Length: 472
Image (cartoon, rainbow, N blue to C red; front, side, top):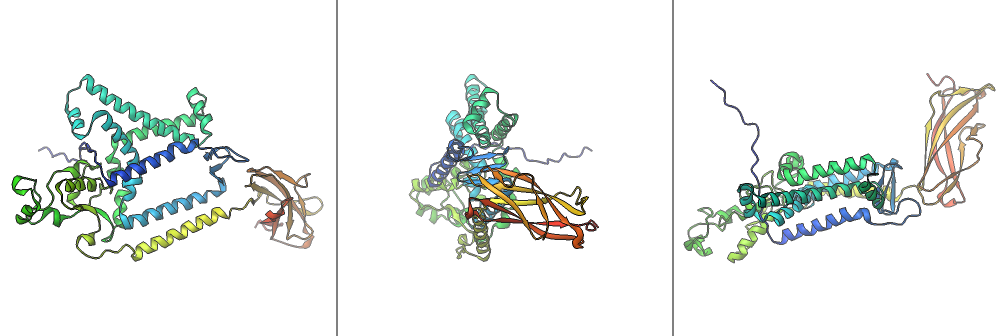
Protein backbone atom coordinates (compact mmCIF):
# COMPACT_ATOMS: atom_id res chain seq x y z
CA UNK A 1 0.00 0.00 0.00
CA UNK A 2 1.48 3.28 -1.04
CA UNK A 3 1.80 5.82 1.78
CA UNK A 4 0.10 9.15 1.31
CA UNK A 5 2.60 11.91 0.60
CA UNK A 6 2.55 14.62 3.24
CA UNK A 7 2.43 18.23 2.08
CA UNK A 8 5.07 20.13 4.05
CA UNK A 9 4.27 23.61 2.78
CA UNK A 10 1.31 25.55 1.51
CA UNK A 11 1.22 26.49 -2.14
CA UNK A 12 1.31 30.23 -2.52
CA UNK A 13 -2.01 31.86 -3.31
CA UNK A 14 -1.44 34.94 -5.50
CA UNK A 15 -2.45 38.18 -3.80
CA UNK A 16 -3.87 41.00 -5.93
CA UNK A 17 -4.23 44.01 -3.61
CA UNK A 18 -6.82 46.54 -4.67
CA UNK A 19 -6.18 50.27 -4.48
CA UNK A 20 -7.94 52.24 -1.77
CA UNK A 21 -8.22 55.86 -0.69
CA UNK A 22 -8.45 57.09 2.86
CA UNK A 23 -6.68 58.73 5.78
CA UNK A 24 -4.36 55.83 6.54
CA UNK A 25 -3.47 55.36 2.89
CA UNK A 26 -2.61 59.08 2.77
CA UNK A 27 -0.40 58.70 5.84
CA UNK A 28 1.39 55.79 4.19
CA UNK A 29 1.93 57.83 1.00
CA UNK A 30 3.32 60.73 3.03
CA UNK A 31 5.74 58.47 4.90
CA UNK A 32 6.76 56.78 1.66
CA UNK A 33 7.52 60.11 -0.05
CA UNK A 34 9.48 61.32 2.97
CA UNK A 35 11.46 58.09 3.32
CA UNK A 36 12.29 57.92 -0.38
CA UNK A 37 13.29 61.58 -0.44
CA UNK A 38 15.70 61.03 2.43
CA UNK A 39 17.13 57.80 1.06
CA UNK A 40 17.60 58.81 -2.57
CA UNK A 41 18.58 62.47 -2.10
CA UNK A 42 20.79 62.29 0.99
CA UNK A 43 23.95 61.11 -0.83
CA UNK A 44 23.74 64.21 -3.04
CA UNK A 45 23.43 66.66 -0.16
CA UNK A 46 26.62 68.69 0.21
CA UNK A 47 28.12 69.61 3.58
CA UNK A 48 31.18 71.85 3.67
CA UNK A 49 33.97 70.69 5.98
CA UNK A 50 37.41 72.12 6.64
CA UNK A 51 38.81 68.60 6.47
CA UNK A 52 37.20 65.62 4.77
CA UNK A 53 34.64 65.11 2.01
CA UNK A 54 31.92 67.65 1.31
CA UNK A 55 29.17 65.01 1.44
CA UNK A 56 26.64 65.26 4.24
CA UNK A 57 26.48 61.50 4.91
CA UNK A 58 29.37 59.30 3.89
CA UNK A 59 30.75 56.06 5.29
CA UNK A 60 34.46 56.11 4.46
CA UNK A 61 35.67 52.55 5.01
CA UNK A 62 39.18 53.22 3.68
CA UNK A 63 39.88 55.95 6.26
CA UNK A 64 37.63 54.32 8.86
CA UNK A 65 35.54 57.44 9.32
CA UNK A 66 31.79 57.94 9.16
CA UNK A 67 30.54 61.42 8.33
CA UNK A 68 27.04 62.32 9.54
CA UNK A 69 26.54 66.02 8.85
CA UNK A 70 28.59 67.78 11.55
CA UNK A 71 29.53 64.58 13.36
CA UNK A 72 32.57 62.50 12.46
CA UNK A 73 32.61 58.98 13.95
CA UNK A 74 35.90 57.12 14.00
CA UNK A 75 36.54 53.39 14.09
CA UNK A 76 36.87 53.37 17.88
CA UNK A 77 33.44 55.00 18.11
CA UNK A 78 31.78 51.86 16.82
CA UNK A 79 30.03 51.45 20.17
CA UNK A 80 27.80 54.35 19.06
CA UNK A 81 26.35 51.98 16.49
CA UNK A 82 25.66 49.51 19.27
CA UNK A 83 23.93 52.27 21.22
CA UNK A 84 21.87 53.28 18.19
CA UNK A 85 20.77 49.70 17.57
CA UNK A 86 19.85 49.37 21.25
CA UNK A 87 17.74 52.53 21.03
CA UNK A 88 16.07 51.24 17.84
CA UNK A 89 15.24 47.89 19.50
CA UNK A 90 13.85 49.53 22.62
CA UNK A 91 11.80 51.94 20.52
CA UNK A 92 10.41 48.99 18.57
CA UNK A 93 9.45 47.18 21.78
CA UNK A 94 7.95 50.35 23.25
CA UNK A 95 5.84 51.18 20.20
CA UNK A 96 4.79 47.56 19.65
CA UNK A 97 3.55 47.26 23.22
CA UNK A 98 1.31 50.29 22.63
CA UNK A 99 0.29 50.16 18.97
CA UNK A 100 1.18 46.72 17.66
CA UNK A 101 2.94 46.31 14.30
CA UNK A 102 2.70 49.91 13.11
CA UNK A 103 6.38 49.78 12.21
CA UNK A 104 5.64 46.99 9.74
CA UNK A 105 2.68 48.78 8.24
CA UNK A 106 4.23 52.20 7.79
CA UNK A 107 8.03 52.29 8.16
CA UNK A 108 9.48 48.88 7.25
CA UNK A 109 11.69 48.87 4.14
CA UNK A 110 9.83 45.83 2.83
CA UNK A 111 6.52 47.68 3.09
CA UNK A 112 7.86 50.89 1.55
CA UNK A 113 9.39 49.19 -1.46
CA UNK A 114 6.47 46.81 -1.94
CA UNK A 115 4.13 49.82 -2.02
CA UNK A 116 6.23 51.32 -4.80
CA UNK A 117 6.26 48.07 -6.76
CA UNK A 118 2.50 47.65 -6.43
CA UNK A 119 2.02 51.25 -7.60
CA UNK A 120 4.10 50.48 -10.70
CA UNK A 121 2.10 47.31 -11.26
CA UNK A 122 -1.22 49.12 -11.04
CA UNK A 123 -0.08 51.89 -13.38
CA UNK A 124 1.01 49.38 -16.04
CA UNK A 125 -1.44 46.48 -15.63
CA UNK A 126 -4.46 48.10 -14.02
CA UNK A 127 -6.17 47.58 -10.68
CA UNK A 128 -7.04 44.28 -9.05
CA UNK A 129 -9.65 42.95 -11.49
CA UNK A 130 -7.58 43.92 -14.52
CA UNK A 131 -4.48 42.17 -13.13
CA UNK A 132 -6.40 39.00 -12.34
CA UNK A 133 -7.88 39.01 -15.83
CA UNK A 134 -4.44 39.62 -17.36
CA UNK A 135 -2.88 36.70 -15.47
CA UNK A 136 -5.64 34.34 -16.57
CA UNK A 137 -5.54 35.48 -20.20
CA UNK A 138 -3.46 33.54 -22.74
CA UNK A 139 -0.11 34.99 -23.72
CA UNK A 140 -0.37 37.70 -26.34
CA UNK A 141 1.62 40.71 -27.48
CA UNK A 142 -0.33 42.95 -25.12
CA UNK A 143 0.28 40.66 -22.15
CA UNK A 144 4.00 40.33 -22.92
CA UNK A 145 4.28 44.10 -23.25
CA UNK A 146 2.49 44.82 -19.97
CA UNK A 147 4.29 42.12 -18.01
CA UNK A 148 7.64 42.98 -19.55
CA UNK A 149 7.27 46.70 -18.90
CA UNK A 150 6.32 45.99 -15.28
CA UNK A 151 9.43 43.92 -14.66
CA UNK A 152 11.67 46.41 -16.47
CA UNK A 153 10.40 49.22 -14.25
CA UNK A 154 10.83 46.98 -11.18
CA UNK A 155 14.43 46.29 -12.17
CA UNK A 156 15.10 49.97 -12.74
CA UNK A 157 13.70 50.82 -9.29
CA UNK A 158 15.77 48.01 -7.76
CA UNK A 159 18.90 49.15 -9.60
CA UNK A 160 18.51 52.74 -8.46
CA UNK A 161 17.95 51.48 -4.91
CA UNK A 162 21.17 49.45 -4.98
CA UNK A 163 23.20 52.19 -6.64
CA UNK A 164 21.97 54.79 -4.15
CA UNK A 165 23.06 52.58 -1.25
CA UNK A 166 26.51 52.29 -2.84
CA UNK A 167 26.76 56.08 -3.12
CA UNK A 168 26.73 56.38 0.66
CA UNK A 169 30.20 54.75 0.78
CA UNK A 170 32.07 57.19 -1.46
CA UNK A 171 31.77 60.67 -2.93
CA UNK A 172 28.49 60.35 -4.85
CA UNK A 173 29.22 62.56 -7.91
CA UNK A 174 32.59 60.93 -8.50
CA UNK A 175 31.45 57.38 -7.82
CA UNK A 176 28.47 57.50 -10.15
CA UNK A 177 30.71 58.66 -13.01
CA UNK A 178 33.20 55.89 -12.27
CA UNK A 179 30.38 53.35 -12.02
CA UNK A 180 29.04 54.05 -15.49
CA UNK A 181 32.51 54.40 -17.05
CA UNK A 182 33.65 51.04 -15.69
CA UNK A 183 36.35 52.43 -13.40
CA UNK A 184 34.60 51.95 -10.03
CA UNK A 185 35.92 49.41 -7.51
CA UNK A 186 34.61 45.84 -7.76
CA UNK A 187 32.84 46.24 -4.39
CA UNK A 188 30.70 49.04 -5.86
CA UNK A 189 29.45 46.81 -8.69
CA UNK A 190 28.98 43.79 -6.41
CA UNK A 191 27.01 45.77 -3.82
CA UNK A 192 24.81 47.47 -6.40
CA UNK A 193 23.98 44.27 -8.26
CA UNK A 194 23.37 42.30 -5.08
CA UNK A 195 20.91 44.90 -3.75
CA UNK A 196 19.30 45.15 -7.18
CA UNK A 197 18.61 41.42 -7.14
CA UNK A 198 17.38 41.28 -3.53
CA UNK A 199 15.14 44.34 -3.92
CA UNK A 200 13.61 42.96 -7.11
CA UNK A 201 12.95 39.57 -5.52
CA UNK A 202 11.72 40.80 -2.13
CA UNK A 203 9.50 43.66 -3.26
CA UNK A 204 8.45 42.34 -6.66
CA UNK A 205 8.24 38.55 -6.41
CA UNK A 206 8.18 37.45 -2.75
CA UNK A 207 6.20 40.35 -1.26
CA UNK A 208 3.88 39.07 1.47
CA UNK A 209 5.97 35.89 1.78
CA UNK A 210 8.73 37.98 3.33
CA UNK A 211 6.39 39.30 6.03
CA UNK A 212 4.75 35.93 6.65
CA UNK A 213 7.67 33.51 6.58
CA UNK A 214 11.00 35.34 6.50
CA UNK A 215 10.59 38.21 8.96
CA UNK A 216 11.23 37.12 12.58
CA UNK A 217 9.30 40.10 13.92
CA UNK A 218 6.04 38.50 12.84
CA UNK A 219 6.84 35.54 15.10
CA UNK A 220 7.94 37.17 18.32
CA UNK A 221 5.49 40.09 18.23
CA UNK A 222 3.02 38.09 20.32
CA UNK A 223 5.45 38.27 23.24
CA UNK A 224 5.03 42.08 23.28
CA UNK A 225 1.24 42.08 22.77
CA UNK A 226 -1.28 42.11 25.59
CA UNK A 227 -4.96 42.92 26.01
CA UNK A 228 -4.19 46.69 26.02
CA UNK A 229 -2.19 46.74 22.76
CA UNK A 230 -3.83 48.65 19.92
CA UNK A 231 -4.35 46.44 16.91
CA UNK A 232 -6.38 46.55 13.71
CA UNK A 233 -9.54 44.66 14.65
CA UNK A 234 -13.00 43.91 13.36
CA UNK A 235 -15.95 44.71 15.63
CA UNK A 236 -17.59 41.28 15.67
CA UNK A 237 -20.62 42.31 17.72
CA UNK A 238 -21.49 45.14 15.39
CA UNK A 239 -20.52 43.44 12.16
CA UNK A 240 -22.11 40.04 12.75
CA UNK A 241 -25.10 40.81 14.93
CA UNK A 242 -27.17 37.81 15.98
CA UNK A 243 -27.73 36.42 12.48
CA UNK A 244 -24.27 37.10 11.00
CA UNK A 245 -23.15 39.32 8.15
CA UNK A 246 -25.21 39.70 5.01
CA UNK A 247 -24.98 41.49 1.68
CA UNK A 248 -27.19 44.47 0.95
CA UNK A 249 -30.50 43.38 -0.55
CA UNK A 250 -33.83 45.10 -1.09
CA UNK A 251 -35.06 43.85 2.26
CA UNK A 252 -31.73 44.47 4.03
CA UNK A 253 -30.77 47.86 2.70
CA UNK A 254 -31.59 50.05 5.66
CA UNK A 255 -29.82 49.68 8.97
CA UNK A 256 -33.13 49.42 10.84
CA UNK A 257 -34.21 46.53 8.61
CA UNK A 258 -30.97 44.71 9.31
CA UNK A 259 -31.28 45.20 13.05
CA UNK A 260 -34.84 43.91 13.07
CA UNK A 261 -33.64 40.69 11.46
CA UNK A 262 -30.50 40.48 13.63
CA UNK A 263 -28.11 41.09 10.73
CA UNK A 264 -24.89 42.96 11.43
CA UNK A 265 -23.46 46.02 9.70
CA UNK A 266 -20.95 44.02 7.64
CA UNK A 267 -22.37 43.71 4.12
CA UNK A 268 -19.79 41.04 3.19
CA UNK A 269 -18.45 43.10 0.28
CA UNK A 270 -14.94 41.72 0.67
CA UNK A 271 -13.35 45.13 0.15
CA UNK A 272 -11.28 44.78 3.35
CA UNK A 273 -9.84 41.49 2.05
CA UNK A 274 -9.17 42.84 -1.44
CA UNK A 275 -7.03 45.77 -0.22
CA UNK A 276 -4.94 43.70 2.21
CA UNK A 277 -1.32 43.43 0.98
CA UNK A 278 -0.91 40.06 2.70
CA UNK A 279 -4.26 38.66 1.57
CA UNK A 280 -5.86 37.97 4.95
CA UNK A 281 -9.42 38.47 6.14
CA UNK A 282 -9.28 40.75 9.18
CA UNK A 283 -12.74 39.51 10.17
CA UNK A 284 -11.13 36.21 11.18
CA UNK A 285 -9.35 37.97 14.05
CA UNK A 286 -5.72 38.88 14.74
CA UNK A 287 -3.36 36.92 12.51
CA UNK A 288 0.40 36.70 12.25
CA UNK A 289 0.26 37.96 8.65
CA UNK A 290 -1.37 41.27 9.63
CA UNK A 291 1.13 44.14 9.38
CA UNK A 292 -1.26 46.78 10.81
CA UNK A 293 -1.19 48.87 7.64
CA UNK A 294 -4.85 49.88 8.31
CA UNK A 295 -5.83 49.78 4.63
CA UNK A 296 -8.74 47.57 5.58
CA UNK A 297 -9.91 50.38 7.88
CA UNK A 298 -9.93 52.79 4.93
CA UNK A 299 -11.79 50.27 2.80
CA UNK A 300 -14.45 49.63 5.42
CA UNK A 301 -14.81 53.34 6.25
CA UNK A 302 -15.43 54.07 2.57
CA UNK A 303 -18.20 51.47 2.47
CA UNK A 304 -19.76 52.76 5.69
CA UNK A 305 -19.64 56.32 4.33
CA UNK A 306 -21.39 55.27 1.13
CA UNK A 307 -24.14 53.61 3.18
CA UNK A 308 -24.43 56.52 5.58
CA UNK A 309 -23.51 54.39 8.57
CA UNK A 310 -20.97 55.21 11.24
CA UNK A 311 -17.30 54.40 10.78
CA UNK A 312 -15.33 52.09 13.04
CA UNK A 313 -16.51 48.63 12.03
CA UNK A 314 -12.81 47.96 11.51
CA UNK A 315 -10.59 50.20 13.59
CA UNK A 316 -7.53 50.46 15.78
CA UNK A 317 -8.59 49.12 19.14
CA UNK A 318 -7.48 46.78 21.91
CA UNK A 319 -8.85 43.51 23.12
CA UNK A 320 -10.15 45.20 26.28
CA UNK A 321 -11.81 48.01 24.34
CA UNK A 322 -13.47 45.48 22.07
CA UNK A 323 -14.99 43.90 25.19
CA UNK A 324 -16.14 47.31 26.45
CA UNK A 325 -13.51 47.43 29.20
CA UNK A 326 -11.12 50.23 30.10
CA UNK A 327 -7.81 49.96 28.28
CA UNK A 328 -4.54 51.37 29.60
CA UNK A 329 -1.61 52.61 27.56
CA UNK A 330 0.70 53.34 30.46
CA UNK A 331 1.19 50.06 32.24
CA UNK A 332 4.25 48.84 34.16
CA UNK A 333 5.78 47.16 31.11
CA UNK A 334 5.22 50.18 28.88
CA UNK A 335 6.63 52.52 31.50
CA UNK A 336 9.66 50.26 31.94
CA UNK A 337 10.30 50.24 28.18
CA UNK A 338 9.91 54.01 28.10
CA UNK A 339 12.30 54.66 30.99
CA UNK A 340 14.97 52.36 29.58
CA UNK A 341 14.51 53.94 26.14
CA UNK A 342 14.94 57.46 27.55
CA UNK A 343 18.03 56.34 29.49
CA UNK A 344 19.54 54.75 26.37
CA UNK A 345 18.88 57.88 24.27
CA UNK A 346 20.33 60.12 26.96
CA UNK A 347 23.43 57.91 27.25
CA UNK A 348 23.98 57.92 23.50
CA UNK A 349 23.48 61.69 23.21
CA UNK A 350 25.86 62.29 26.11
CA UNK A 351 28.50 60.00 24.61
CA UNK A 352 28.31 61.76 21.23
CA UNK A 353 28.25 65.29 22.66
CA UNK A 354 31.14 64.65 25.07
CA UNK A 355 33.47 63.23 22.44
CA UNK A 356 37.07 64.09 23.30
CA UNK A 357 38.91 66.17 20.66
CA UNK A 358 42.10 64.15 21.23
CA UNK A 359 42.32 60.50 22.19
CA UNK A 360 45.28 58.48 23.42
CA UNK A 361 45.63 54.74 23.81
CA UNK A 362 48.73 52.76 24.82
CA UNK A 363 49.62 49.22 23.77
CA UNK A 364 52.52 47.36 25.37
CA UNK A 365 55.02 45.82 22.96
CA UNK A 366 55.25 42.31 24.39
CA UNK A 367 57.80 40.71 22.07
CA UNK A 368 59.98 41.00 24.08
CA UNK A 369 58.25 42.19 27.23
CA UNK A 370 61.42 43.93 28.44
CA UNK A 371 65.08 44.21 27.45
CA UNK A 372 68.06 44.49 29.80
CA UNK A 373 70.54 47.02 28.43
CA UNK A 374 74.34 46.89 28.75
CA UNK A 375 74.34 49.70 31.34
CA UNK A 376 72.07 47.68 33.60
CA UNK A 377 68.86 49.53 32.86
CA UNK A 378 65.63 47.78 31.79
CA UNK A 379 63.76 48.93 28.69
CA UNK A 380 60.05 48.51 27.91
CA UNK A 381 58.52 49.51 24.57
CA UNK A 382 55.04 50.92 23.95
CA UNK A 383 52.98 51.95 20.96
CA UNK A 384 51.02 55.16 21.48
CA UNK A 385 48.01 55.68 19.27
CA UNK A 386 46.97 59.34 18.97
CA UNK A 387 43.74 60.45 17.27
CA UNK A 388 43.01 64.07 16.35
CA UNK A 389 39.24 64.43 16.05
CA UNK A 390 39.24 68.15 15.33
CA UNK A 391 39.45 70.07 12.05
CA UNK A 392 42.72 71.77 13.02
CA UNK A 393 46.28 70.39 13.32
CA UNK A 394 47.82 69.75 16.73
CA UNK A 395 51.40 70.05 17.93
CA UNK A 396 51.84 67.41 20.61
CA UNK A 397 54.45 66.69 23.27
CA UNK A 398 54.66 63.23 24.88
CA UNK A 399 55.75 62.93 28.52
CA UNK A 400 55.50 60.37 31.30
CA UNK A 401 55.16 60.32 35.08
CA UNK A 402 55.12 57.73 37.83
CA UNK A 403 58.62 56.26 37.32
CA UNK A 404 61.15 58.51 39.11
CA UNK A 405 64.42 58.71 37.20
CA UNK A 406 63.10 56.88 34.13
CA UNK A 407 64.04 58.00 30.61
CA UNK A 408 61.47 58.41 27.84
CA UNK A 409 62.67 57.99 24.26
CA UNK A 410 60.27 58.82 21.42
CA UNK A 411 62.91 59.42 18.78
CA UNK A 412 64.72 62.53 17.72
CA UNK A 413 61.65 64.74 17.57
CA UNK A 414 60.63 66.54 20.74
CA UNK A 415 57.09 67.15 19.48
CA UNK A 416 54.78 65.76 16.81
CA UNK A 417 52.34 67.42 14.46
CA UNK A 418 49.10 65.54 14.14
CA UNK A 419 47.02 66.63 11.11
CA UNK A 420 43.26 67.20 11.52
CA UNK A 421 41.03 64.12 11.50
CA UNK A 422 44.09 61.89 11.41
CA UNK A 423 45.75 59.34 13.64
CA UNK A 424 49.41 58.81 14.52
CA UNK A 425 51.34 55.90 16.01
CA UNK A 426 54.38 56.72 18.11
CA UNK A 427 56.90 54.15 19.34
CA UNK A 428 57.94 55.08 22.87
CA UNK A 429 60.77 53.39 24.80
CA UNK A 430 61.00 53.75 28.56
CA UNK A 431 64.31 52.93 30.30
CA UNK A 432 64.55 52.55 34.06
CA UNK A 433 67.44 51.73 36.34
CA UNK A 434 66.93 48.29 37.91
CA UNK A 435 69.09 49.21 40.91
CA UNK A 436 65.88 50.43 42.53
CA UNK A 437 65.44 46.76 43.54
CA UNK A 438 61.90 46.87 42.13
CA UNK A 439 60.59 43.52 41.03
CA UNK A 440 57.47 42.62 39.16
CA UNK A 441 55.57 45.49 37.52
CA UNK A 442 55.03 49.17 38.19
CA UNK A 443 52.19 51.35 36.93
CA UNK A 444 52.80 54.78 35.44
CA UNK A 445 51.13 57.14 32.96
CA UNK A 446 51.85 58.65 29.58
CA UNK A 447 50.86 62.31 29.19
CA UNK A 448 50.21 64.08 25.89
CA UNK A 449 50.14 67.88 25.96
CA UNK A 450 48.81 69.88 22.99
CA UNK A 451 50.96 72.95 22.44
CA UNK A 452 49.41 76.30 21.49
CA UNK A 453 45.95 74.92 22.32
CA UNK A 454 45.77 75.09 26.07
CA UNK A 455 41.97 74.82 26.05
CA UNK A 456 42.27 71.13 25.11
CA UNK A 457 44.24 70.29 28.24
CA UNK A 458 46.50 67.35 28.92
CA UNK A 459 45.31 63.80 28.31
CA UNK A 460 46.74 60.72 30.01
CA UNK A 461 46.71 56.97 29.55
CA UNK A 462 47.90 54.29 32.02
CA UNK A 463 50.69 51.85 31.25
CA UNK A 464 52.69 49.18 33.07
CA UNK A 465 56.47 48.85 33.32
CA UNK A 466 57.76 45.27 33.65
CA UNK A 467 60.99 44.37 35.40
CA UNK A 468 62.93 41.07 35.36
CA UNK A 469 61.01 38.39 37.21
CA UNK A 470 57.60 39.78 36.26
CA UNK A 471 57.24 37.38 33.34
CA UNK A 472 56.46 34.64 35.78
